[in-house]
Structures are given as C-alpha cells and as structure tokens.
Image (cartoon, rainbow, N blue to C red; front, side):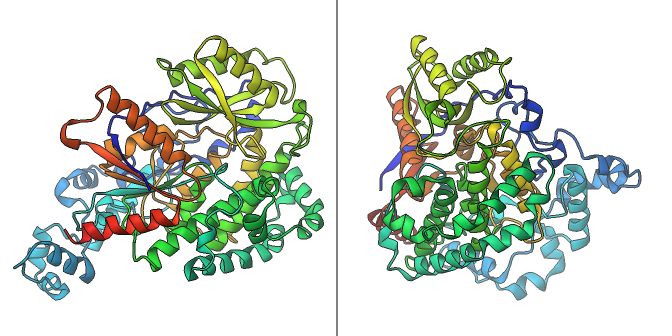
Length: 559
C-alpha cells in the first residue's frame, strides 16, 4: 500500500463534453423528465454541465404549479432563511457518549437523559422541534423537485477522532483480472458475500423477465427481446465464481461478468476490513464514490442498494450494454473476434505536457463533426472519461478512435496509450438504449433503493447524491455521458475538506493516476508548506495493504 500526498489544487477541471453529432443524437439520451434532483447540500458543478445533461436547472413543474405551496408564504420564507432555525438533529446516546470520551480526560460524561431533561438548554444548543424540521424538509423537497427524503447533513458522518476525514473510492469496468483478490476466499465475510451474490445470480433470469423489458417501447424493447432470445444460452455458461478465479480472461472481460465480479470483489474486501479487521471505513467515510460501474459498489457500500440488487443490476447493465451494439441503428458487433470495422472500443490517451482537457475535447468535437453526414455508428468517437490531468479515455468505433488518436499524435497533443479491457464502449451515445432499460429496472418495485447512509458523489459532475430519486437518475445518466473523475477528486479536499482518499477494490490504476498528479504538482511547487492542504492517497488492493491500513487506523485511534 502506497500513501502519497495529493495537493488540494492537484487536478484540472475537465471541459464540458459536447453531445454526439450523429443523426441519432436525440435518441441517445433518456427523457429529460428523469432530471436529477440533488440535495440542497450539493455544491454547484465546478464546470458547465454537458449540453445533454439531465440535471434539473430549475424547480420541477409540479412544485411551481401549486399556488398554495408553503414556499410562497413570505412569513414561512423568512423563518426558513433564519440561520437560528437551521436543522440540528438530536444526538443519539452513542453519539453523546462518543463526544464525551473524545473531549479529553476529566470530561464530564453526558448521558441521553441529561440532554432530554433540559428542554430550554437543548433548544439553546440548536435542537429544534420535529415540526420545524419537517417544514424545512418539505420546503427543500419542493424546491429540489425531488422525493421527500431528508438531506443528509455531512456533519453527522464526521467521527469524533484525530483521524483525517476520508473518502472511499471504488473502481469500475476494466479493473477485473482472473484470480483477483483470491486471498479473500478463505475469509468468512468474503465467503458470505459470494454466497449471497451467487443466490442473486441463480434467480437473475426470473427477476429479469419480471421486469418486462420486452414490453418497453423503441430500442429498449428490442434489447429486452434480445435478452429473452438468448436466455437458454446464458443458462449453460460457467458460474461467475469459476470465471473470476479460473478464467479465461476473455470470459471475465465480458461486461455481464466483469461488472458484477468487480462489485462482488470490492464488497468482499470492504466486508472483510469491517468484520475481521474492525475498520469501519464505510460507516465513517465523509463521502463515497465509484468510477463508472463502481458507482454500484459505492451504492451498496452506503446501504442505498442491497448486495443482491447490486449484483442483479450490474449483470443486467452488462447484458444491455453488450447487446446495444447489435442494434440496427448502431450496427456493431459485441464479439471479441469481430472485424475491426465492426468493433466498439475504449482507449486511454496520455496528454503531452502543456496540453489540456479542453484542447483534447476540441479536437474530438472537430473529428465528430467531420462524420455528421454519415449514417449509423461509422467513425463515431466521443470522450468517455476525464480520469486525471494527464489521461482522457475515448469511446466509439475502432475506426473513429484510431482516426482521432492519429490526429492528436500529429498535433503532438496526446498519444494513445492503451486499449481498455472492456467489451463495449461505455459512457457514450451508443449506450442510450441500454440506459432506457436500466431506467426501467432501477424504477421497478422489484428493486429497492434506500436513502444513502453516507453521501455519494456523482461521477457526472461531483454533486452529492442523497436521495433515492437522485441516485436512480445518476445511475441512468452515467451510462451514456462522460465520467468527470478528475472533477470528483478535485472536489473532495477543496469542497468537502477530505484529507485521505482510500481506493478500495481490484487494481491500482485510479490510485496511480492520482499519485502521478500529486508527484507532478510537487515537482512544480504545488504542495503547500508543512503538508497543509495535502490529501493522502491510500491504495488497498492486496492483503498486505489491508494490514497496513489497520496499522494506520489503530495508530490514529491511540492518539
């Protein structure tokens, strides 16, 4: 495990990604009615949203249409805006005792009875009545256009300890490899995770058919019928556990295997740290986030999704994105042995010194415009992810990516470093039909989505996700829109005061990118004096890393 200081100003903010220029642009995105509703605690995006963003820019119509809504009352508005009336939750017995213990030797023990027995004193300390709290929450629900779920106060997650505030980060597609985290197989928490996951996968086809995807309109319905037609073939495939630990790699790379496998491995690691190592890293995290499909791991870690639902959803996500390439309007093949002219691809670019995300995006935009009069997917290339100040990932057809990469090389702006081990070009317009299918699955009564126990960070624009409706909208939107990972990382210390990033899951690619940014900035004097403002980068990807994290944690407990 390597710990690296990451200066607060480390990462560049990526430019907005332009929408697809092909004739299918309007069909590439889910309906605008699925606009994201973010909590009132969410910070504003650090850069303009994509032109195709699903985020709400104004209150929802149903709120504006109600002339009797409480927020039209000037008296209530005045009360709402009064800082003295801001919500402070009544602390639990455990929280009160924790504060007492952490206040130093000689501190008076505070009991729950002490707090409840002095109404006036409690009020002076910020404890408000439930009626005032409910009025405020109703107001926020109306203004955000979201469901009536209380926004999550960040202070409730900040442990009373000398330990620095941390965020938990999960990897996504492309991080899988045969035998990943094999050392966990003998540990009971990981065994329990695999047992639950295999149970969920055993009933996957019945669950999928109950969703009724084949009844959806348009290309989403076509995808649903494709899944019906290929069911018998899937039932003959090897079990996921066998594929993960024995391979072959091509079978594991198929998105319907890779995505649930990464989730299961990540949660196995998390549960082992929590139960065998006694490290409550999820419960005490200030923020939790995931890269790409890692957002499902983050949702499970924070309790917004059950493990079983997460496994079923990632299996479905993998199937829908796989078969989306075969739709007549796209005309590509999901098979690894398909000819280059019919293959989708994702490739990582390394930016040359002195060049920015904005310059790369301009070139990609120009290359896309050159094929505006072509039909189908021919030559399509889009930016799929802004991973760091020096790495951008492209998605599209192999032809489009190769042409864009060659132009960037000739301009001496960037070079193609590697093709990602994925079976579909995620986070681009090809995935819009799959997004419609996932919208149906996430909104179904068969899927239970809860308010996150800790705030989640959207990979689209680094805003906070604190309600079930905003989580659904984010998971749908991210399928066909670019990941702004560098924006997310930059927001953690700058906006939320996070001092430690714990990368948890297979592979170390994301931690290494953050580490390289840290080194580059330190070489030009980016680090502040005496470490002030720096953020640790902690990678937990091996058994030795787990032991080292425990040593760090226990050392801080003893301070």
